[in-house]
Length: 452
Image: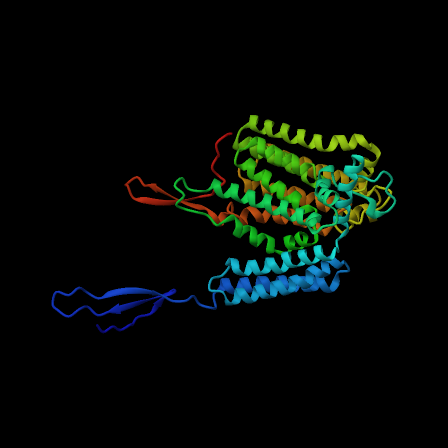
């Protein structure tokens, strides 16, 4: 048999025409599609390469400019990791695959975290949390009675001391390091939220699977805004992860589980409390008002059980650490003093503190009113509303820092990056009025889930 190829290439495949067998009754020519490798100049590959290259530049600049040793270690490791990820992205066959994200995550999270844990170098937040766990076991309160210097202050709610208990129980072993438990809880809660959102959009027969939650989690962990706190031990990531889990559970109409997640987040840090009204508003839409009440009672009960016994054990210490110090009104000034509007007004404008408090209260009322008049009807909408409220609050609070931007960034990006995002809208085949199958696109979180 003799064959020849001709004709243009369409996309990534060529149509090869083969001659028919000899004979008058032989069939016509047959076209056999032959897949060809994708072009190395695809826009997606270029964008992915530039993305990792920009992350490498950011990590290098941070390494050169920061005075914090853990951040220097992260910057050096992440520069190499993101650089290798850019190379992998440039050489990979398909853009935005898991290979480059895995390389970036190893270089920006795993390697610096292991180095810092082995060396024992830690930032102040990790030291404070580990000391609070020891104090909780010894005295029943995680707060120093009369703090005299900055390192003795603990601005976190009592639930955060649980991350310091492994150090208090196991002693000076790597497994007891609070950074490992921060990362474990953060990734576990975010992964659970992705699984919940992915199951919300799965077709009845499972014929339209969405992207695997592990892949979305890998990309999230590899981004600098998340990789840095994961490696150095940022206390905000577990809070954000539990907030995302609470919104995912509320979007699925699970009041008790959502209430437990809301209460757990609220027992860690004050920054988690705005998720309570947003999560309850979402539950009222997805599962009804009775479900929202059940979730609210569960959340408040859990938060009260975690906070009140410690507050009653030493009320003055609790007020100094948890109320006055975060507001910048304690005996020792808070190091959270980034030049955002709230700090600038309170520092340089007469009566500026009252102005910031008034503006903060008005913005809270406005967001609360929006939850009543126009409640969020999907997890994505609830996350957007929460990100907006937190962004406004963090700009107006006097004791604030640029690192808090991780809250709105993760809330805005996670439910779009993961299986709940618009890019993963499921295709549903329905019968048209003439019996012709038609394809309609549905968002996995717009449908009302069943009640518990």
